[in-house]
Length: 218
Image (cartoon, rainbow, N blue to C red; front, side):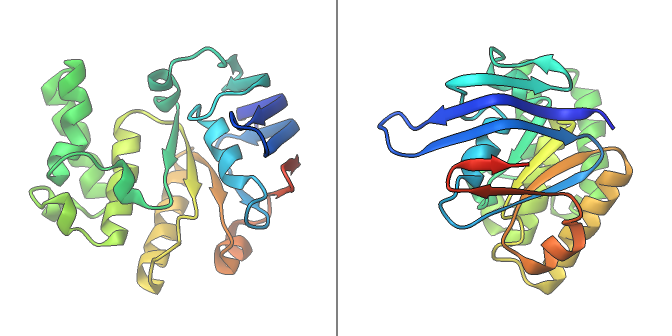
């Protein structure tokens, strides 16, 4: 399967010096789940933010579905590769669930009827339809996570990067996360998932990328 996200000769240095991440070559296939593992402080989250353009390479090349993407604006990158923070509350900006689903389309002036239909379909798919008028502050962690992923998909992302997605979830919500990942994978979405969770690694770790001391070992 062709690569959804690729890094070649990649180097990232933190602006104030110290930590450096290097990745000679990494190709993440679309439609597959890749687990990224490694010790705390090894560079996993840095790598994940490079994959979706939150951090920009000092050296090397980022390709998104085969296209050179170093110079792409963050909005264009986010429309192809979505990022889920470890704490999903960090990326929810609207007062209500429905507002979160539609605010970007409102700002960009997209067809409101198409946006409504897409938002309703995603909320139903992820079991959030009954919560559309609820305050985002009153959602559980699992509900916030599902809403954040809905919003990412609302923006059109074809590949998702998840940072420690099982952190803080109980067993029921972990199972809901796994079901969601399985269903999206079946529909052609690919994932890169940072995790220390032995259960998640056992379930999805047939393809595993290891990060150690700032070096990506693929």
